[in-house]
Image (cartoon, rainbow, N blue to C red; front, side, top):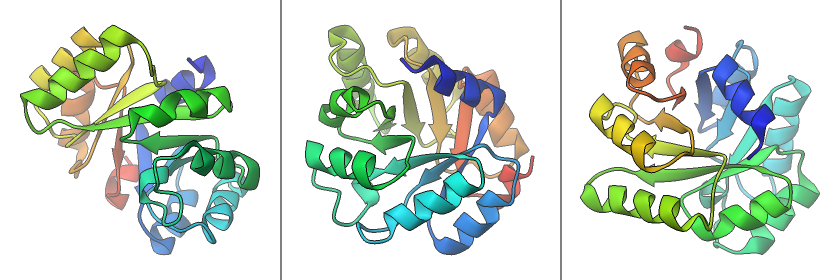
Length: 192
C-alpha cells in the first residue's frame, strides 16, 4: 500500500473527477489535490496528465475510459507509466491492479455497488488478497452509510465514495458513513 497516497486522500477528502477539457481547466484552478481523469485517448492522455502535474496535483488515470488503453492488458499500464507522468490508475478490472503496483503506480479499484453480488465480489477480493488496491471506490457515492460500513467491514482497503455526489450533504453523509473521501465531477463540490 502506498501510505503517502492514503495520507494525501485523508488530507484532501474531495477528489475532482474530470470528464472533459473544461473540467480539467476548472479542476487545476481549485484547491483539490487529487484529480481522477475520466476521459481522453492514447494520443491526448499525456497532455492531460502534464497539465495536472504542472499544477502540482496528483493525476489518476481511469484506464478503462481512455480510448486505446481500455483493453484490460498490462501493456496499457506500461504505456501510462512510460509515456505519462501519471501517479496512478483507476480501473474496474482487478487483474490490472498487481501490475500497476509492480510499476509503482497508485491504484484505485472501482466497484459499482448495485446489488448483493457486488458486495460478494468485494468480499472475494478481500479474502483472496490477490489484488489489493490502495483504495476501493464504490459507486454510486450516495449509497447509504450502511453499505459503506459493510464494505469497510469486509475489506481493510480504504473506501472512496464516487458518483452522484452533488452537495455538501452528500459529502458529509459519505464521510460520516465511513468513506475516507469522495470523488465527483460536480464542480461546486470541488470548492467546499
